[in-house]
Amino acid sequence: MLTAHTLLIAGCLFFGAILYTSVGHAGASAYIAIMTLFDLPPIVIKPTALTLNIFVSSYASLRYITSNLFHRSLFLYLSLGSIPAAYIGGHINLPSHIYKPIIGVLLLLSGVRFLVQAMQTEKVTRPVNIALAIFIGACIGLLSGITGTGGGIFLSPLIIWLGWVSVKQASGTVAAFILVNSVAGLLGNIHSVSSLPHQLPTFLVAVLLGAFIGTRFGISRFSPNTVKRALGFVLLIAGAKFLFA
Image (tube, rainbow, N blue to C red; front, side, top):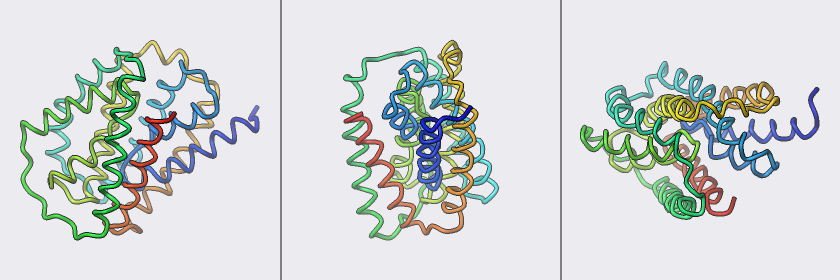
């Protein structure tokens, strides 16, 4: 039976999914913040966020890839480093007071940077540095496994800043990256799935509906500068979550 509490959480997840998928993210950081805000047990939050991420990023990556907003070789290089690292990170449970402040500040700075860049013209893309891409994938994979996110909030600013992809092309590349990282991270902590909440089906419906709307905005409605503004807003929210949640 659906309770008002469950429906309220699902509604918040729905709006989080709209915002995040409009820039190619799956929304794990938002889901974690929402579930924390509504006092879900800590033991269920990480596996639930990763499970929601897997479903949302599967749909989002399919939509962006079929719209030709995807950099295949960059995705492969990043995944080569990230998949084993995310699996390892899934086994690690660092105290939150160690990594949260550092990540929060970095995300806030990245968010401000994107809001400023939204007033500028987009960079011309340049060739991918293969070794650097693999290294970045490994670092972000490890971080995503530890934090219970798919890594998109860390990856998007980097690959756009490095000029490897256009803003919109980054969305599809990051969505697919989040999918493989979320799967690897969950496998690295597979015993946690026994703690998935009974409300999960309701939450899944909510985030998939949000992803349906968000990807439509990201693919056909938003200009590159609008995507930058939305991404900046997402990063500010994520940064605040890491600092204050």
